[in-house]
Image 1 (cartoon, rainbow, N blue to C red):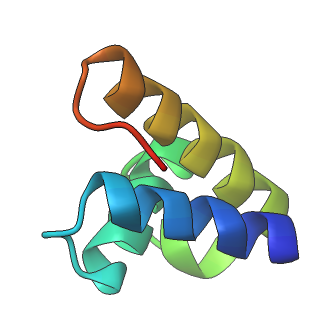
Image 2: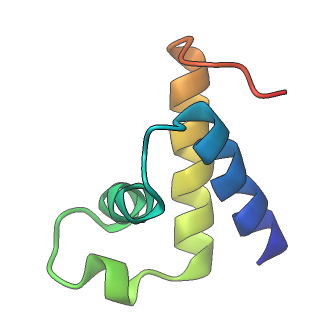
Length: 67
């Protein structure tokens, strides 16, 4: 779980304007699509994979650099 929390902290640094609820909701869509219950059913490993993907996307777009 610490890897997941570290990745969420990375995303917070990349998107400081995004609230944690928004971040989790967006990651649920990345992980599971827009199916009903996506947030409720999402496993930690799915969330971690989605968070890593999102961070890589933001970096590739030049959004920000993480210290």
